[in-house]
Image (cartoon, rainbow, N blue to C red; front, side, top):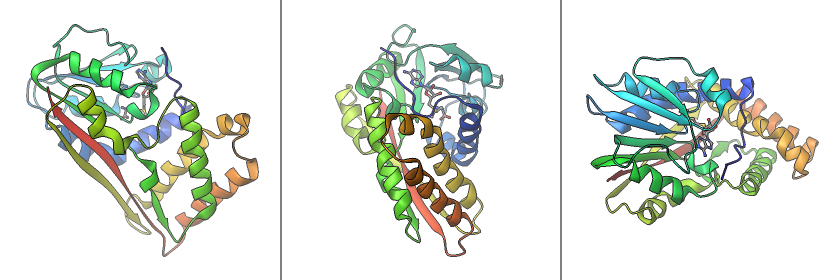
Amino acid sequence: MSDIYIHGTEPSEQARLALLNRMTNAAFVEFLRVAPGSRVLEVGSGLGILAAEVAASAAGVDVVGVELSAAQISAATPAPGVTFRQGDANSLDFPDASFDLVYARYLLEHVADPGRVLREMRRVTKPGGRVGACENDVSVLRFDPPCPAFDRAWDVFVRFQATLGGDALIGRRLYRLFRGAGFDDVQLSLQPEVHWHGSPAYIAWIHNIIGNLESARNGMLTAGVISLSDLNAGIAELERLKTEPDGSGFFAWNRAMAAR
Ligand SMILES: C[S@@+](CC[C@H](N)C(=O)[O-])C[C@H]1O[C@@H](n2cnc3c(N)ncnc32)[C@H](O)[C@@H]1O
């Protein structure tokens, strides 16, 4: 089984993913609390930017990144303590109980069977180890002043991702998914995004959201799920919001951490 990745691996999309990493990595690395000497697995490691920061977060940490796309692995920058393997999250090519910590970020929303991926993540984790995830529920994304054309385009994006087998709303399901994968001890938390005109990441955050739509532009237009004018109107609204002196936005990433 292979999953269809809605964002693709164009250089513009890889630049957006790198930008998103710069905005979100510090809080996520803190959430992981990696112990020195840990053997760690990131599933769906993308460009490896997060894996590099996780490896550097404590002494003697080794991170293996498993990634489906050869294009992502080729674009990854080598970093101390990090190795990449091309592979599929649905069927991890590691023996049982191989890692102290296994995590996935922004991956489960893209796979057709997230429960299967979590069971695989659990299988390769040592007893006493931990499994973590960070995902989104894009329905909680808000901007002010209101952006109705963007909201309509965003709804289409959510439905389009579902037609590819993904789930842009998966964040709300993490607890149930973890429990279904066999974890008894699961803790949930949120990682907030709160940005307003003049705050450090306000423009970058809006740029990232526009990039989400842009990455699916060709797919949505080819599938006929949105018209060119409606898509452009939604993006134009967010471009205007970048310069709106009263503009603001908020969102929260959904996180789960479970004991094996
Ligand atoms: C949004 S990126 C996140 C990358 C990284 N985890 C991060 O936080 O920056 C999702 C990555 O998952 C990869 N991916 C999608 N389906 C996969 C699968 N079944 N197995 C492994 N990787 C997969 C994509 O190619 C993409 O690089």
